[in-house]
Length: 296
Length: 205
Image 1: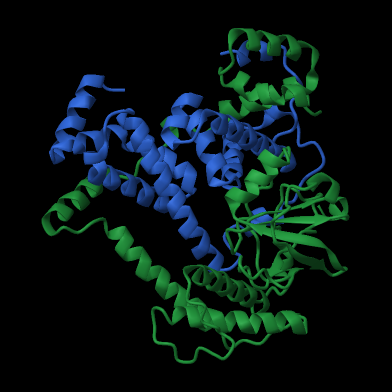
Image 2: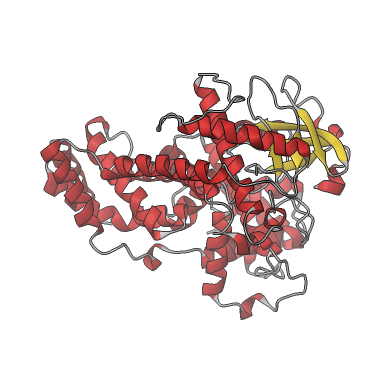
């Protein structure tokens, strides 16, 4: 049973004791009559009841000592926390390993187009690692944009190639299809929503096309009808978004903040998608399509 | 919670570089900070890293701490930020490692049949599901829920902690909670409970 739209905004504040007495009375009256809202409030309270509590947390032994040791060591040799120093090189090493792994393997199961895209991604990925290691061969198509944004793009493409390879070279070739890009918006148990390709998420030169069943997983994706979207995305650059069926609409890749702003603040979308745990980019995608109901 | 004046004195002393005073603060807050980072990060290693990062930032930033907000608010903010930073880095690392860690959750088999009355579920089981659900929220939605439900901060306090306005806190809590509820409903671990009579009473607490 669904809660009432008009009370939806009040129910959480009610549960959290953030309403004025007058508002709280109003909600309380309403709850007597409305099973949907009552069920929502009950759920919220059940979540609170079972929510992990502070008492259940065991701080790792010696935690405070470790913190103080770092601080004292720092005062001695002006060194800051080791984490930053440890993690960055580690990430860089990982990036190199991933890029190297992704290079020599062949492509199965891909269309000529996305294979070509993949090749380019590898070239870019390889180019990217050249920042931390001398580039043995930053192949032909890796154009050197130079701007910082470009580096981000390359990083995305780096991830692109890695996830592609881990999917196609592994023992479970179907794996990429089992990945839900957005299970909050999925239509049931079937893994209908598979990751889409992001051929070139460059915000300045918008990509050629977003491909479903490609090799980049958006942080989240929603499918909306043109009627629902109205003019909310006017001024944003979108690209054709295609599935097996061909082009079904237009995909707008957005930063998370922008994505949420449009969904919630502009469109008043009731319930946002959740982040895909396997995302390979922090960008999210709004797909404007007449087939929104069928896909979403 | 310890005596407030003692805490203020420790903060003051720590600002002047007194490491022992700062150590008192670390011991006083380690549980609350670690609890926050653990739920935010979802695993003990990252949580410890983020918590340590928060305390080190606190130590380094004490000179800038003007006591306009409480020390705890400020510390939670540092911890929260450390988590979000770490999650962003971690997200990339994890992605680079390919799909593996969360594969079970991605299969997302939704038992449509009613899994039995909620009362039959162990509370700890529901707790585990909540933890799982929290991992699927955006860091922004997750942090407000944790600060609200676990640290029991008011909307105003959360707003101060995260430096976002109260309206944003309100909508994030609402969306986060709805998503969490939906997650629990969809995974079948949280059947829509029949309305209980004492809802209204409990709700106004």
